[in-house]
Length: 310
View (cartoon, one colour):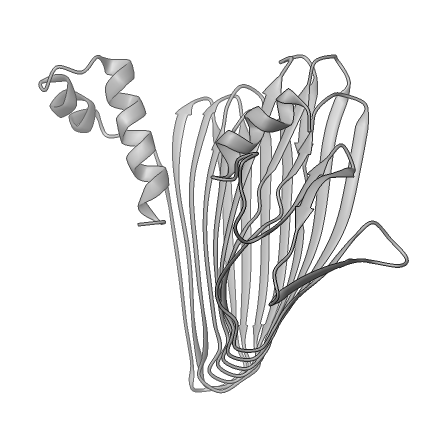
């Protein structure tokens, strides 16, 4: 792998070139830069499109799977399809992440299309970071698409972060939950300059006692724009929660539109949305502790964005 990929991996994951444990597939500019599997994890190329079928054996425990993707120069439009098949009762961690770098005026884009199929009682912790670096006059674009299918009692927890430097991003996530299954998604997004970020969630609660928790924390500064649209559809006895909290700095703009549909009298659904600026007294308090205004603002933003992942 090249040096840019190595630098991006340091920011996106804890994977290193000396990594020897667990399974991994490092994607660089649309090709494989390194791969390894274990007895309980297999990765086979798809036959009809770029991507992998990743299979975790039933009952597998303490497996960590790394699947980061990096684009290291402009004029690349990388697309990959990954299907995750998680066996019954398995409990694994998946570390993803995407870094896009351009050293020209051209666009560097990555589009990861992921599908998750969790068997009965399976549990997955999925961590994903997005980062853009390089020439500020180039365009760094990331457009992930996620489909989720949870069997009875399955649990998928997703922690997603947009660190910075991504000029355009559209995240689309759809999920179908069966009885007793749980979906937890916590996202943190920072946009600056004229960057744009769009989030779309659509969750169908089809199984009795299924539940979903969607939490978005975002900061829109300068002239950036963000939109958040969540749709939770409770078709049976179930529970759902959607929360969008945003901080505006400068001329930043945020549009939050949570949507709920209850098709059953026993569906319990809640949505919350709050948009505002940093309170002046917070800045003043931190300045009395010796911080500059810029340091105080950064500390507040860092705490706010990481709050939903604690």
